[in-house]
Image (cartoon, rainbow, N blue to C red):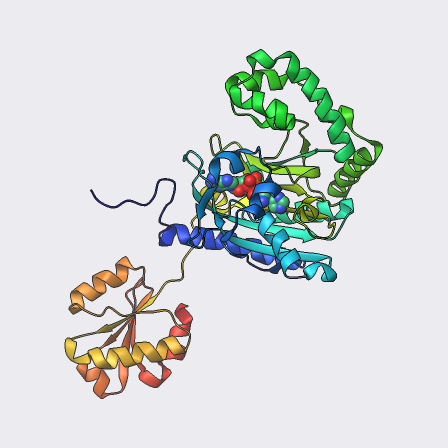
Length: 413
Ligand code: HAM
């Protein structure tokens, strides 16, 4: 049997890589305008980093993590997301004394989900985390970064922002009780998973993908009715801040997130163009996370966006720069061609030099590679210290002295 990539993992070939790069470069540049500096955490962490922080009963922790025993016996997990690793880095790197901190990251994440369009087992995220800022202005800033990234990618019309508040600890415990009462009344109709959630974490039922559960969830009491005054004020300030800077949003009281570390603000930039995979960028506030990991109490807010999902939504393929083909007329000029190609590359030009083939084949390949120009070097031209520069779009050609070649070719780049 021919070897295949592992289910849910994919090779990202050059056309798609270009789209991914456009997404990461846009995200990195926009984030930098807001002061977010790039960092990266390891792809593997000790399992504890994710287990407690994401939540023992979440789908990711119970079913989707790639966890294995290291040869030394410790339990290791391929990161399913980036926030827990950043929080771990804050603690292990002693970075808390430099707060507030703004970080940007991108890279692969791993979740053993059922693969489908826009959902993979190895996928890639861009993300930002703002640590050490307790006020609503931080949430507004983080959401604005997400909105501007999508705007810059030309996705504004395909995506809308939904926000919600998950309340503070106090609001949560009273809501929890309200939910326990409500779902308790429907216990017999809930899925087996949700019956377990009812005991361990009833909030998770709201997130259930089970058809039967969803019907019961549709009539569940809404969170905001259980909010404390502080939680209400915080959310109002976030909404007001977004209004001030013209970031459009809709309130979605049913919006919940898949991890336990969230509190107060939760948001998702969603699309209806990727089938079931609606969330493109998602995040929120996680004030308790660093403390749960054993660090000092540190407020945090951030988001992550699926690179594949953004790449799928792009209207146009990013253009790749057109190469210049250096073409020896016969094998006798190959050594000179290699020397010339090398010096043109050092002058900053994008040069394509086939290592084999006759003149005809080289010219066919040059047009297949979308080269803008062919630099032809034959015996006579070389003897005169010249090359023929042929514009492959118009067919026009002229001879140019070799020492003027790099400067002349700049008109094509
Ligand atoms: P998340 O909602 O789990 O949040 O993931 C964020 C985004 O990653 C999703 O909206 C989606 O675009 C993409 N994504 C997730 N799973 C997959 C998958 N299996 N295949 C393709 N794309 C996927 C987090 O990861 C949080 N760490 C976000 C955050 C940062 N919150 C605060 N700071």
